[in-house]
Image 1 (cartoon, rainbow, N blue to C red):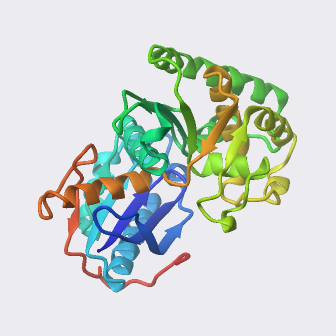
Image 2 (image 1 turned 90 degrees about the vertical axis):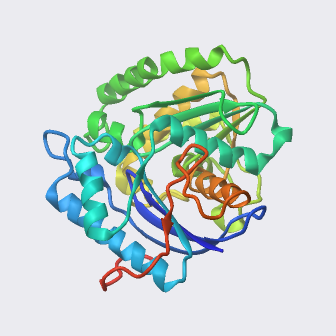
Length: 339
């Protein structure tokens, strides 16, 4: 079966097509994405502007057409904090449905955290014991912990790397005062969540998911993506602390030359490093594992689980998932972006 997963994130909008069946790992078939940062289209009242909505609708139409042309049989479509927190987010979702014929499922922060933990558990297996997963997105930072596949605790806080860069680090390179103020804000925001997790005891394994953690591990010496997903990759707190200081002194033009750092991610890498460093310090983590699977894979795996029992009924993000049935090409538009 070929399944499309349409991910409307804070930094990019991405359609991934995978081939899989119940009980098998999903194998990527094709990808279509664009570095569309919806939060850059927010007005003074926190609403997504007309220009931003047009960009979003245009991409969703492209994605729908791309899925149809490549014979996708099913599609999962979801959005995260960029639309969830916009003042007109619900109206934007309604407009996407009306003009692009796609229903975007709005995931809550805890749902994001929980579905990412599903992917981590499937990757490492039951032998990994109790797992704590940390995921730094563009708009929010998710944490989830559990000894089973479903989390015992899942928390989301507004510490996304893109959000913090816009709000706290306007200079390039940032001032010492900006970094100091952001450091205090991160710790203050994270403290209540860390206290909640402390009540669960120590995890057996700590995992970092998301592009931010992969980029940080790469600049700290982890194997490149070309080495494949099965190479063990780790991030050590001592290395991260060193690189956080280096990034603070680097302009964005220098960060783009670091291994594994794209032009889109370079501006927010310092904020991501500061969140990761604070989390490792506050959770008393010396080393974490880098998992190649995250939210998208969690959603895919849960969808195929559902097919084992009922191939017709649509399901929601937490154990059930909204499904776009009978994918057909959208009205003809020119494909834009990488494929």
